[in-house]
Image 1 (cartoon, helix red, strand yellow):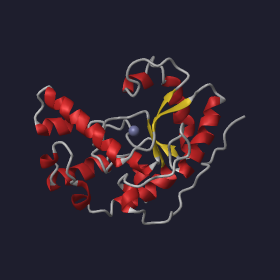
Image 2: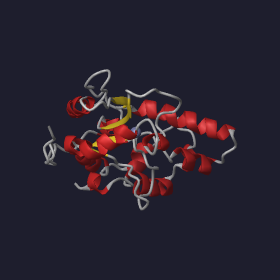
Image 3: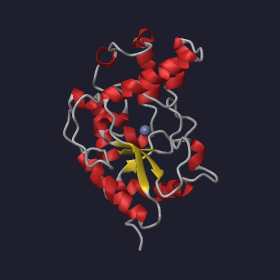
Length: 232
Ligand SMILES: [Zn+2]
């Protein structure tokens, strides 16, 4: 028993544009299920992939799926305050946060297309979303190998690859994006005026999140993803 050698999905133009609220994580997105909190279409594809992986002893367990703007805002503010406590300047603080976390309103998790996964068949200890656990003797090596071999057939790709030429967020071997929907959504997202949409009150360090910062963040972070996910 093998898998088909062609992708189950093929890229095609989706309905555009997507609403601003949807793109910024501010709409009520109907989710596939409690254990697969993703956009309905994405959840369907994820479940198929999950079933296939399970047959080979890998349990694709979702640590994080859809995330709202408000949720991302609380993550941002929590990290900012904790970095502040250890004495980081505002600039260093923000730089540190955006190693792994996004500015609220810019997370791919807002779209319901992106998912962080671990192997739920392994014993869970401490932080799970760490690079080491997906390499060498780590508990999620089997999952990584399975995903390397099969994820793309189901439409799932790593945006934050290990490619040293890629800028922006650090390598995230746990974060997958459902390309058939995430590609047209990014295309739509890029048409938003981020200077107008993002600078909201209630965000820690907001004085430093100026137009210059946002321009760099857009190029390096939002667009610092695998090339295939930018092929509109
Ligand atoms: Zn993620």
